[in-house]
Image (tube, rainbow, N blue to C red; front, side):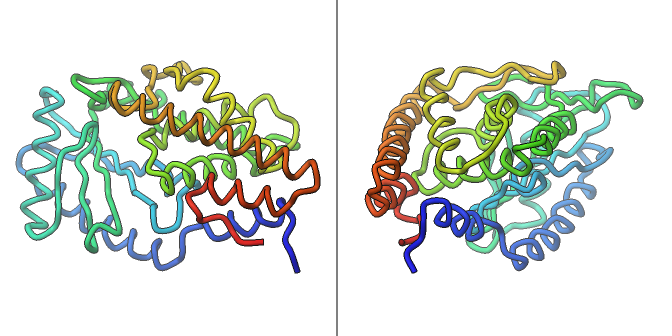
Length: 289
C-alpha cells in the first residue's frame, strides 16, 4: 500500500527515535564519565546536569549526542583553562578514546565515534533558591550565561499546548534529522529553541506543512541570533563562525526550496514527486512510498 505524505512522516519520526540499546549505552557511559570527573584533583564537582537532545526527547537515532554540564566549584578560571581541566581528567580515564576540545565543550567519542559525549564545564552564578544559571564557555572565547532547566521548561511548555500537543518536539527532531543527514553546521540547541518559538504561535501541527514553514522562516531571518525567551541567559547563535554560517545558510535555502516543492507537489496530487523532494531534503533517508 502506497503511503501518503502524512504516513511517510509518521514512519520517519518513528525511525528517528533512539533505540533502547542507545539509551542503555548512554547510561553506562554517563557513570564512567561522572566517575572520571569526580576523581579530578583540579576542580571540585558540585553536580551534573544532563542537557541537550537526548534529555529533551528530541534526539536522532544513531546521531544522539549526549550533553552533560558539570557544575564546578572553587574559583572560576578562564574558559580555556576550565575546558583543559575537563579534557585532562577525561583523557586520563580514557587514554585510548578520542577526547578533544571543540568549543564550547569537550568531546568524547566512545565506540569508535558512534556515541559522542559533549561535556560542558559551568560555574553557577545564581543563588540556590533561584533558577540555575551558569557561566559556560562561549562559542569562540570567554564565558556566556546559560539556563538549561529554564530552556527545557520553555520547550516542554510549548510542546504541551492544546492543538500542537507533541508537535514542538516532532518539529525539532525533524530539523535535527535534516541537519545530521545533510551535515549542516547549525547548533542543535538553536534548532530546538527556534522550533519552540515557531510553534508557540501555532494552533495545530502537520509535519510537512509546519516543517516547510519553519525552514522558510529560518531562511527569511537568515539564522539570526536568538534572545533567550526566558530572559535568563545570553543570546545564542546558530553557528560557531562566519564560515560555517555561510555554509548553513546555503544548505538552509536549498532545504526550504525542496520543502516548498514537496508541499506544492502533494497539493497538486503528485504524491510520488512530493516523496522524491522529501527524500532529497533528508539526504535520501526519508521512507520510500
